[in-house]
Image (cartoon, rainbow, N blue to C red):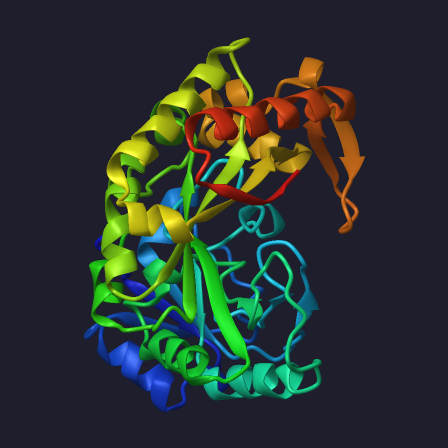
Length: 345
């Protein structure tokens, strides 16, 4: 886990409730600066990574939409936080904000009340689907890494409590960090943690400032023992080196097969998402992490796609991708047949 010690807290006045004050108390003698909006920050004169290391933002989440997903979860819950300590070269959160430190939202009770109201509008018992056979699932970490946020505010544990005890709802989040603090919580299989995995040498290049793939795999048994449901997230799948990416994924699958105990394998499923990149992010990465772009920006394999937000994204050519998906599915069948693919695209 990174030793996150910010030296500046930016805050909106409405974020300094009891929880906000408690967060501030964890950082005595820190510089404080009030801002009008948590998502419109002043120019801080820091580079991309220093902002993530040195700045913490406290805000109040005012727009609390619950959005349909149908993939990693049934729905995406209103965000508990935005931004991350890590600086992954493909992160879609970073591409929408020029300045993107960790922002914690302190009105947690309002957020969980929104989810509770929403889930009670849904049919019950829930029709079984690939997201879960019993509970309505809500992704609580689409815009941040919950493993980091958990140690910064007791609000995340309160959210874990909410989902663990809720008769109809279940939480899920993806992570690239191993936070031992989470192991002291007993989620009773009502919180699903999804460890993001890719070949280790690629992760070192593109998963900037995150825990190693080896550490993530080694933690899977421990999180299962602590009471979590544990899945894996092969995302993003990056194609490189002719057939080299295939060999590297086979080796990754063999590492999983060797390290996970039978009872952990029996409940583990996976998601597979091939890379989608972004033109603006590509330009930014040429200054921040140019080596990563040699893997991420490969126009001869990719095609343009207009995103729902109006920007230009780039993804693997649809005909090539169909073949890549088939290859990936076959490799999983060959190497880890016990691992069910929940969805792949």
